[in-house]
Length: 294
Image: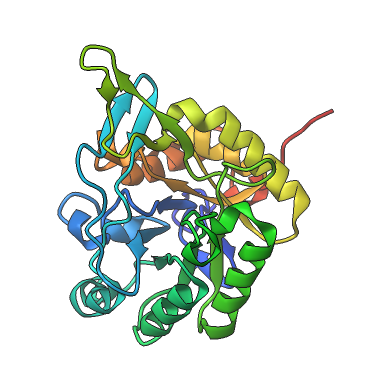
């Protein structure tokens, strides 16, 4: 317990200490600062800003979101203001918050895109690490996703490591035979109009519907590597957080929950504190990888 009698929720990875394991996921929390009027950002473990590219992007045409029975489809198309504008317009306000841990999600369509975007972001102060989104189609290799080909993935990670002045987190795709979880490729059709619910036709499925699959993937990943794993996929309760940590996650990201409750991330921190008190858990990091299988 901490000196005040509360459970110790601190976790860490790559030399970064988080006050708790709850991280707001990229693409669901804007650039973070937009939530400051409804969420106490300094109570979160951290936040990942929406994906940043070298140049601004407008994203996909609407409709881009559709609620499913136990989750959500989205095909936003990586709309963003660009890395340079982020440094000038968003990062200063986040940095003024002092105790907010900020991760920058980075994407590109070629290795050069990743390299140039990271080089721009290297100039900004207050970014804890880069989250490399490898779900984009590599236009230099016929549109195959970086995360779908081990060689392309190796190339982009090596490129990022070579130029980055901060730690790197790789956000992997689940749409392969053996990997971790982001969103699952899916679709929905309007039976009345006989048209797709999403203008892009296919979209990424997230939310509680994918949690059991995500949990299994985190478990597999945590047992396959010796580096920290961040879990995500359908997390809405403190019990969900504990499950992912028992499966091997050092921290978790919360995404879709913020759509149906904008204060979901902060509430999860409070719920996790209560959970640990009720279950006499003094240090939450002791749960990491603690699943009993015999």
